[in-house]
Length: 70
Image (cartoon, rainbow, N blue to C red; front, side):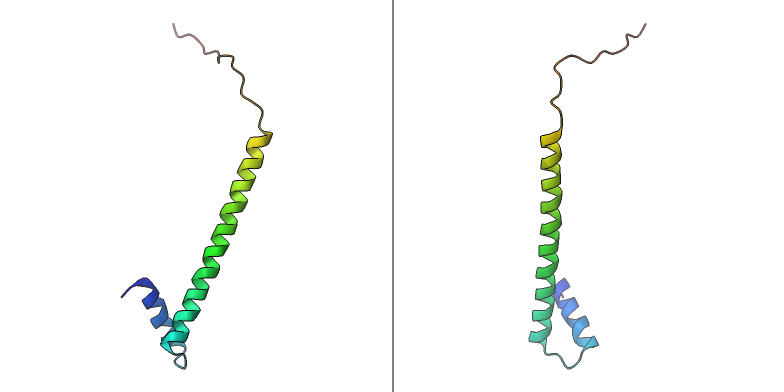
């Protein structure tokens, strides 16, 4: 039994009046909504990262001084 089949079986057990086709459609629609939500979050994070990178000052070419060990 695959994971979507398990979700369909759980839905059918909870709502016995549904047909298997209706339950499959409900699970597929829910998965699609979740996928779009994840894509939206990813896009927002990426746009925030790009905006940060655009505002960030350029690194200086001067070497970083380190303390000399004796």
